[in-house]
Image 1 (cartoon, rainbow, N blue to C red):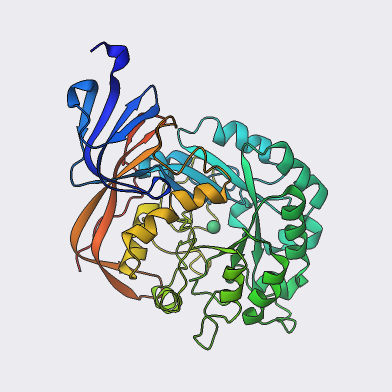
Image 2 (cartoon, rainbow, N blue to C red; image 1 turned 45 degrees about the vertical axis):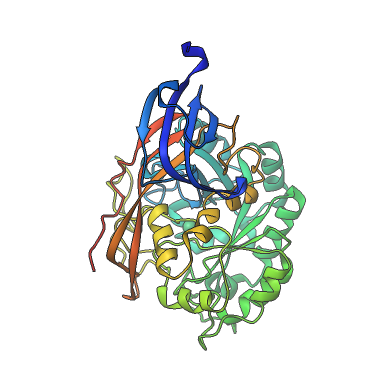
Length: 425
Ligand SMILES: [Zn+2]
């Protein structure tokens, strides 16, 4: 066989799960010129220049993290290195949630998207300042800090990168300015014809003057009517007030109707994720659409880039302060430990986010002719303790860990310093 007729790489003998293709079984995956060339049982090993034995491993479409913060340097310590949370963590595609704004998007394209080995999209911030210092200063996020026209214009002019709009509906903002900012964000989404990703759960503290009669448990029912099919409710399982489970411990009654109407749910795991509340919501039938790790510089410990001010690093009251090491793949283990099946969790990081991005014809599936974005995971059996920041613990009997990934056929080891180690229970 001539070289030109052969494959560059063969991933041999793994369990391929590709929800979009309806495949779940042992297959070989062949790569040629950076593209998926074949997904079949028993491809001849001699047909490839390099063969990697992945027997016993999971071979998935390149994982998509719907909630990343990678506007490095510009968003202060908050912004991670894209490839650290991306290809070095077994993840081929990232969606930055609200880092860049209409004013800072050109920098995001030039300094983050273009040099990254990982594929990077953004949900454009509805606010002029974007996610500076992780939204640390609430006064920057009032209705005066939103320019609807400019944000719609930037989104429309950058559709290759901008695939949605990011906004926050939480008690600190509502107590300061009411619902106006979310109305403005919803208008941006409608006019740009992009989904709006809405953060629920307290982010900003209440104003010193008091809460102005606002109640976190009313926010969902007031915001949902502003949203359209395909818009995303994020952080359903937050331990902060304003998530899916109200103060009486019940799943908010408006959620079921919202999901019937086509609204989507993103876990946005992060460090405010509560196993206690997630158990309750999942038992009530909430199956998230997408996962989203929500890793950033306050909930992981990485050395600050030279010259980055660290003024919030030791702030234990910061609502995001928390665990030291995390990954999207660990968030998958977290869902499985809560009782969802692997077959339910894989679409949350592959086919479903591809649809959310309007890119289901390009990513999120192992189909012949597409860019070879592939994530290979190890499955470790045992008893592992997973803990949240409320000190709830769940026992995982199956832990997933990234082995390596291919991004456009190029291979990256899972070498990120933020990858968690298994902790035996
Ligand atoms: Zn976030």
